[in-house]
Image (cartoon, rainbow, N blue to C red; front, side):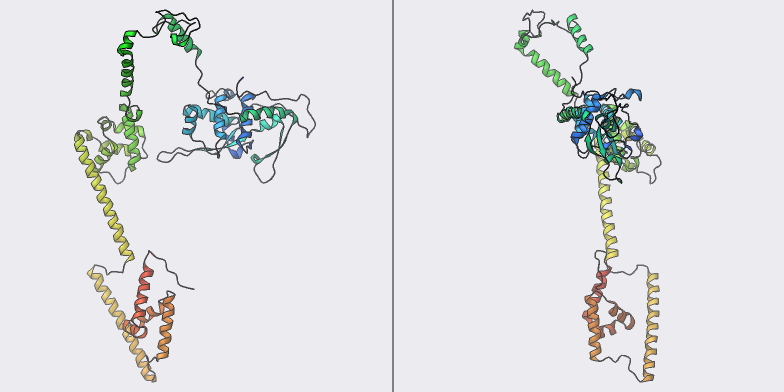
Length: 508
């Protein structure tokens, strides 16, 4: 009996009144692709992997999943391998399986793993939370699933559910009870859910076994082997009979000379010769072309939107000549590229035309690589110097422009401002003399109050009083009023405030 087999759904012949534990006939299990999302699913979310595996085993033994009625490809039924993959998904929290992880754990191909995941979605056991994407030049996103319990499972076993919060989605229903007719089946499903399954072994074709036996009997494959006895006396055959024509042991002369052992070693060396370092098989001509094309699409900015197959075909000559991606980048540096590229593969074809004949030796390609790396280093240093100069320009003291014409215009503007300020001061002096009041007569107490106000402003970062005095009365008068110490501190605060490396706020 299969490990995933389960009894057929129990059916009560006579219906009961409303409110009783009734189990009825179930339709076929099939969820269309548009309803395989959590928001549109009719089932409920399984709170843990154990209850979800009960539903998986029920689906596997119910026989309600018949995908060939809806599509002609994919799985034919819900089998042990699908249950094993579901067991792997039950161990993940959250259910965020990677394709490489499933391939490694199951030993199946990517296409077959996708078939089993589709079976879990089509039976309502899985629902998409987010669907993975695969975009060239970006990291592949893995799909995230929600483990669901189909509504057919609740109906078959008479499980009662309730939505505790009316504002919550329908898939958050909670279990409140189970019918008496479904308790025995639920217990059996619980035993299966608590049992860990091993990875199913691939089935051996009976035709292949029969063909192998006939091949040995006919003598086509070498030494004939009798069906009733083992191949070697060490195996302990049933009948114990053996003859010189049925034994598969090599002659003693070959064993003594070590020829059999040497033949196996030569065979191993011949197999290892076709593999590169690390036990990987060496690439052929087409493989090297695709490898170079993939590296170029990843490293060249204007080739990232191109097809790898197209770039591999364009770079076929340099790939066949043994060029690496670094050597191709060095050659593109020597040829130069355009500022605007409309078709990357076409530009690459033009630039690589005749490259294998110009740099026809490894020494020339090595020189090209050195020139390319030197240009990259020079570009990097130039960029560093440019950033440093910009930082000094915007963060340092203001400097006069280099143009002489600008200098003359600034000098004339400053002279006009000085003349206007002198005229204004002279008018104020004349008005003061007419009234008999001195303009700049300040006693010691007022001077101390002004300096105290300026000191308080500097402590809070405010230099407005000193700057207004410097601009209105001149630097000499400001020094006479505030002193050189306060003027210097105000100047330092202004420089510090203009720097982009600091943030200064006035005090409250």
